[in-house]
Amino acid sequence: MKKIVLAYSGGLDTSVILTWLKEEYQCPVVAYAADVGQTEDWDAVREKGMTTGADKVVISDLREEFVRDYVFPAFRANAIYESSYLLGTSLARPIIAKEQVRVAAAEGADAVSHGATGKGNDQVRFELGYLGLDPKLQIIAPWRIWDLNSRTKLVEYAKKHNIPVPTTKKNPYSSDENLLHISFEGGLLEDPWNEPEESMFKLSVSPENAPDQPTYIEIGFKGGSPVAIDGETLSPANLLAKLNKLGGANGIGRLDMVENRFVGMKSRGVYETPGGTILYAAHRDLETITLDREVMKIRDSLIARYSELIYNGFWFSPEMKLMQGTMDASQATVNGVVRLKLYKGNCIPVGRKSDNSLYHESFATFEEDEVYTQADAGGFIRLNALRLKIQAMTKNS
Image (cartoon, rainbow, N blue to C red; front, side, top):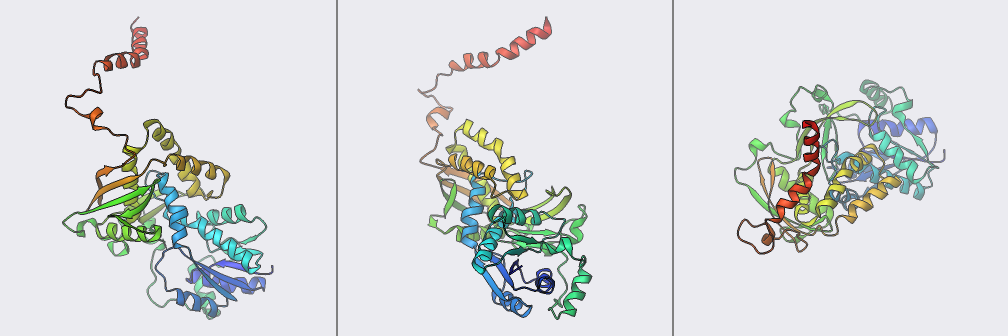
């Protein structure tokens, strides 16, 4: 191999991997870090990468692209995995892989590497991305081939090679953070009976400690994507960041679930997705007045499959391109404003308006009207009941 680009975070695992790659393959290694909105000291990451042996450190700011080209398309489709999970980690993996492939091309590298374990979904997501974008690249997955299969062995290796090991008490959870969410796995969460510790949460207050007065906000949409909060136009990343603060302050967006991993096992994860939870509720509500009933039925019938494609790592597949086009075609009329009440963990739509609204008060009113002949409903009911009537007659004959 001429050169390897490693997806690098600066943590213990990827720091060990960086040194191991240099030792094992005897070639230059570029440490590549993706900024998708996680809380991080990027100067420290760069410095640690160089002192740990990287020949170069590349840090890519992907925040706007991540929200614009990955988060918002998924929310236009109301993507949700197993009726609960808003796909925060799943949506970040394809853009990280795409940028890693770009960096590899720019640096003249012929191999890429990642720190995902052989038990999780991320190995699949990263590698499907690599293979779907540049199948000529060689892929190195250390966790599947080395013998450093425990934290004790990692720490011993790190000390042997003078890799800094955190001296503070280790966070017992495995977590992943980006602009859409933060996830927690492992530790006491491995027993699905255990309630998460309140001290674990980072993005939200508990609903019990949220303000006693509700917060009202208005979100403006164009073509199914959010563009403004309370009349202020914001970039995708800034809009989502603002919603995260508003949602977190009101205890919105916590999720505790046991999910089915693509590799075949069940795993328990706890998530905080404050801004995404607000966006999901607002978008679905705006669709109630802007989407045709039959279009909505067809689109909704595709959501589970579309969400599985994201969760399983098939973002760059032809079927994903087809489904995204279908989802986006349904969104041409999803324009308008939704007013929401945020209160103690709840996100409640309380008003919606749109120039494309299909709701007409003159048809829906309970008062006297001149546009709907109520007597017509009798024939409508009799025609729809015809097969039921025949079935009943057959049973009773």
